[in-house]
Image 1 (spheres, rainbow, N blue to C red):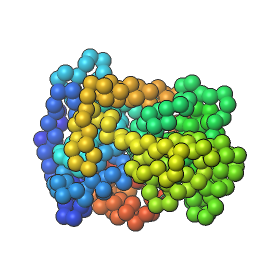
Image 2: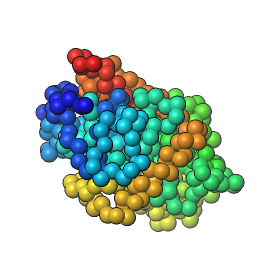
Image 3: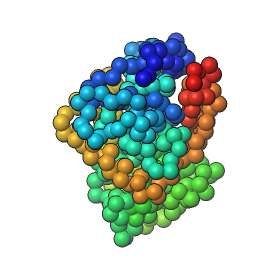
Image 4: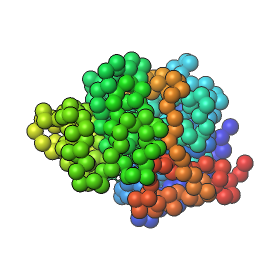
Length: 352
Ligand SMILES: NC(=O)c1ccc[n+]([C@@H]2O[C@H](COP(=O)([O-])OP(=O)(O)OC[C@H]3O[C@@H](n4cnc5c(N)ncnc54)[C@H](OP(=O)(O)O)[C@@H]3O)[C@@H](O)[C@H]2O)c1
């Protein structure tokens, strides 16, 4: 039985993260109560905490933990008590954030079993990043193979921002799908990205990087995933694409930088199967919910191949009490090829 109260990282003054005692969220129909073992940080965490409506809300999207209770209306066989699960919830928007001892998540949407062999600390990072890779590689770039049916000819794909969380998963997915993977990252991340499957890696700070990628691909590059989608990335990606243009999966919205370049925006929140108002307006429909289940299964099946590895974790030492430090680290641009991760049990003063 879950307790009534718990420790959680909630939004304090000016979007800061503070440790507080809050109620354990109530289980609703179609939901599960998860005892969170580890949680991972996304840029969305500190961005969502800045919202004027976020004050007091529990922070955190990505989690890994154990199913403790199952709500009504969860179809038989979907989840079981004691199951190890991971995924993401909507953080900083109420009581359901991941940076807590317990969270309530949908039983089916954006919740998947932890792959065999993955620790809770590693599985916590699967959530937003891996689901975003699924969206980019199947819904934005609709004509590419998947790891379940790899290509025999290596079509080139540019993963701009290869050392981001989304980048690590996209590189691995693309390599398994039989693509020729070109990535960009700072020089110190080139070797690791090659070990994760990138065939070529370029420094995005090189002023000629777009032209160099275009030359290396002999003007044949027609697909890109822009995991950064701001600053210089729209220009560089568009310069790298072929003369005729191509399609860019973007994860922050920007306009097409040149004729012939189609930009396609995706938002992981679509997989939550719930309506959203605010910066993004989402209307959940039977179709979007069915798609979420389908895409969650695709991701689970691909992870079950045992060929995708977690990206390196950066574990902050005091669990939920470290979140503000994690925010400052990320906002200062210090995250480079690592996933900030919190083990809930590391939080000082937690009852066992
Ligand atoms: N639409 C969605 O649903 C969705 C989902 C996930 C994320 N996002 C958004 O996508 C962005 C990335 O998220 P993430 O979690 O993958 O990020 P992350 O892991 O925190 O990204 C860190 C990496 O970004 C790279 N980077 C930072 N600034 C860069 C720049 N100007 N040009 C090129 N690379 C740069 C760094 O590369 P080096 O250290 O190698 O230089 C670093 O390794 C965020 O803005 C996030 O809010 C949107």
